[in-house]
Image (cartoon, rainbow, N blue to C red; front, top):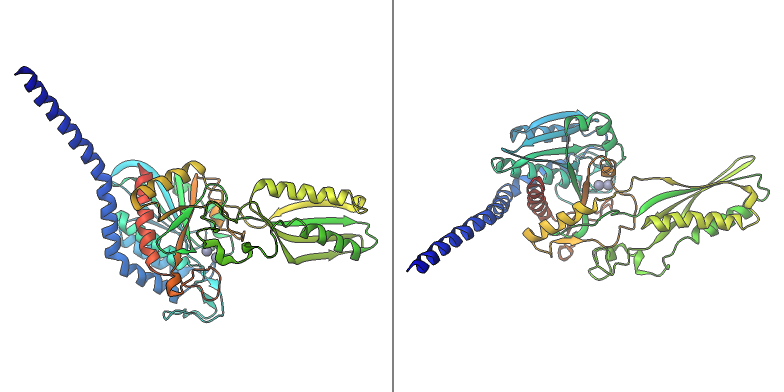
Length: 430
Ligand SMILES: [Zn+2]
Ligand SMILES: [Zn+2]
């Protein structure tokens, strides 16, 4: 009798434990369901916002209308809004009802000069300017996240900062915002951003450390040269020789970057261990006593970069031009994105648990083109991760190849972005 009672008490206790832990698991699950619901409700309005921004694109430094639209939307959501930071930069501050971390989400807002005709029926009405880098999509996604997370304010633990950055295309905006006191206004513990890419819509991707190849310029200087022509030919040959990708390789067809077997998200990616040279883009300066040769190179990793310049130096020093060499250096052209490894692992794990592994890709290779993103200037200040968001729909012939004259986006990616990145911020705040 006694033992039955004990058993009953024990099983009741066990039941309560299970119920408590189930409830504990249901709560985060429910917030992600709510995020999906709210995203679906505002999806059409986000498309309208994106198309409006697309119709009135503004180039770097001139994003007046765009920033006014952003500020208006954020104020409408009840966020604390700061404007004119580093030009037309806007910051929205969303304070959750519960205590927690501080996380920043950055979106770039500028468009690009382009005289090629627009390929959509909501074409640009600002002559010579177009959104061919998808920053209209980035802005719409960030506003969508702000909307969705505002609707979850009561459950939200911590503070979310929305950073709308101007002048990304001329690599000035991030530094301008920092110089204008961005980090006196906001104090993020982590920072995130994304860019649309030719990956299929519905997916996002990232990797630790570099996302893009390291784009550098080589500077070689010689003095007291007697035969400029011969030296130029020699130097060009040595620089070209640094390239390690065969001319007929699949590497050169940019379409292959999204290939599931070979592309940058494939474990056997062909976009690793490479050094490439812009073989027809040398610049030569000849003065009376000096000869300067410059060329652009891309490196997939630091080791190859460092060994390339020392190999080049050694070859020159072993040549008849050894005593003429006065400088051999690699000079930065673009900032290099460098994702925080710990955060990348945490983000990929959290997002694939909620949305599935097929939507959340880990990249193994780096983008061959090193012209990356000035989000890199925020990275030394705050642990951060930069994501790619798929914008293509191959069946519909929509290829989100940024900077190409016929750049288009499958707008369903806006839904993916708002869903996944809202969920990510909720998880990271904890
Ligand atoms: Zn761009
Ligand atoms: Zn861009």
